[in-house]
Length: 314
Image 1 (cartoon, rainbow, N blue to C red):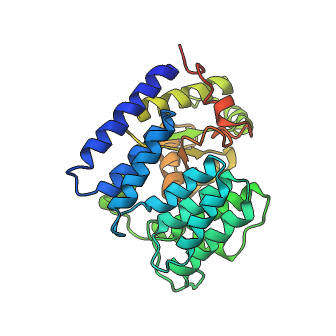
Image 2: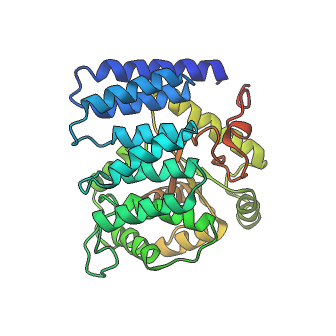
């Protein structure tokens, strides 16, 4: 899909959400989501207008926190003083939603302030799941606060930090989902949050797995693999669907197949491995911000890597 058609699709989706907001009963959430599409369409004024309207409509019971999202927008635009002031107000709200802490942490990641990003996650974890390290705590993968644990681990892993008690608690929560009898309803609930899930193989993992399992239908060229995934996610976005990325590893795949007694050389095993990564919470949302690191792990900015204009044109 060309850059122009992707922008047109984002505009169409934003307008659709704004129209839905008038009668859906979820006005705040619809407007916050519309703002994200205005951002993708590079329409900053309309993004701001949608968020201000969401703030006016917010009664405190929506999934998204529009004020925190507005602060994240300000931080992304380099208006840190204004963003800090708004986030400091939100810090005093002891009834804040999980999304408040997610948006605040994301805001400080935009500013390159990793310490502040982690501080917001720690505060949210302490408020939402204070007993998370208690072995008897009965927490599920979709409980409020667990996403903060996932974000924290992703940041700390990027910093080269070693796993700690909170990381181990996240592993226990994920493992518990597989110790119980998972119902069809549980899988559907998780799937509802992830419309399109792509399995990304980093270059070294792809080469290793191709060497071990030559019969698997794996791409021969890593760049072609990245291009295929980017196109798949752009098409999903065009259709108003949410895309999610999970990262595979050769050792992780082998361990998964051994654990559940699947043949490592079967294409169907790859599909089940992808689902396993998703259910364990080892996923990242897509797309990254234009100035954020690319989803492919290249450490280049997304807008200059897989999100570069014209890259997916065929």
